[in-house]
Length: 131
Image (tube, rainbow, N blue to C red):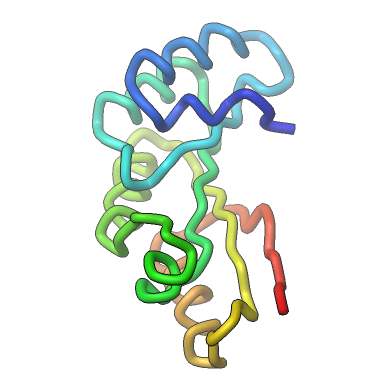
């Protein structure tokens, strides 16, 4: 359960706050983040707080679905960049994904698999199949 950890990717203060709050608990090593808000300072704050895995939503590997249908506001570059920043600090990556969204075809589904492979996601924490 990662309840309350969503602040980690929202801003630097949130990353430190969550790290301090969870230090020493069973949740100390896991945090939620947003790929489009991740920067070096936040990644370092998570690492300093003992974060071992950061989870963020890819939702769909297809940018039109992710940002058009879902309104996520996260680019492929955001996802790849966030993953790189986290890996540089030895933080594993967990992702949240959705398949079978309205208007999605088989190729779009494979785009989701491919982006997870590209960023070397260690954990696919949730796979939501809709329709």
